Image 1 (cartoon, rainbow, N blue to C red):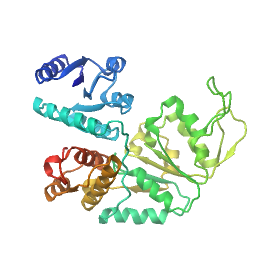
Image 2 (image 1 turned 90 degrees about the horizontal axis):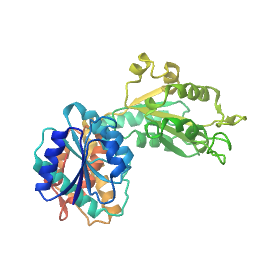
Image 3 (image 1 turned 135 degrees about the vertical axis):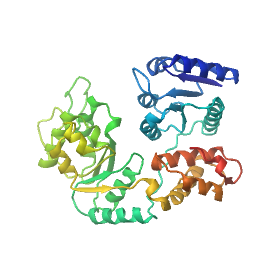
Image 4 (image 1 turned 90 degrees about the vertical axis):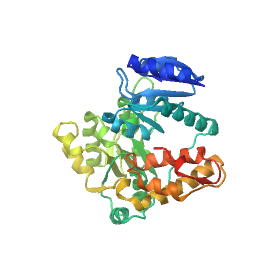
Length: 371
């Protein structure tokens, strides 16, 4: 098995390399993510990467990898927030410094086993919206009241709490006949955001060989969900505000305005009011988007949702991967309930997916649950 180590600290890199070679692994080393991206190939089975590195940090590195490799992240307590962000990108294993080499070897073996069992399968597990806990039900009632209106909604909450599924719930209860379209602002390169949102006409720029509608047009009569709205570049916020006020927009290179009938739902895990003070977000746009703010509680504050969500995810994983029927035993349920879930539902999905794949027999025990 071939392991790539991406670590800027030479002492840490060499120590890991020697230990893994002694354990029988083939190892290649990279001092930063930029070098790794240039030289990684299909022979690599698992990547072990630090999060805090010069030139490109571990989060950007995982984004660039695009899900092609199984990745184990090495993190310190100071970078916990980045570790949680990595969960959104599909990273399933973390090791907090300092750690035992045996823990790294166990993580590598888990990742290799997952890779083998899921070879050739790209599965995206999205659980249905579940509201069993009273805290979730209260928020859901507010969403039901808002849904039939045209008011802009801003969903607030930590990363991974299920803001997209919540936005979809509002759309499905709105009575609008158009599509629900979701876009993550942090996932679009800054120079492409404007053309993605508003579209462009043929000849608008060098590569515009034909006209293309933007997401606003595609969502006509429906709902456009702008996730991570805090990531929108400041210079484009004025254009978005104008569009929302005038109810019309222009494609890039266009001369004729297009009328707009789109419900906007935005979401963020950032402190927008703090961003306004630091001139990173327009106050007038914030109030336009924030007509109805809805705060979604983190998973640790809605404990009664944990097992229903986990069981729904398990059912989906078994179906998508063609696995035999399995269920959580009492020890596994207890372990799931006791955990604080810093990565919220995204982390729960990763944990359950891995447990379903790695467990033997028809019972998932506490020993199959890895955080």
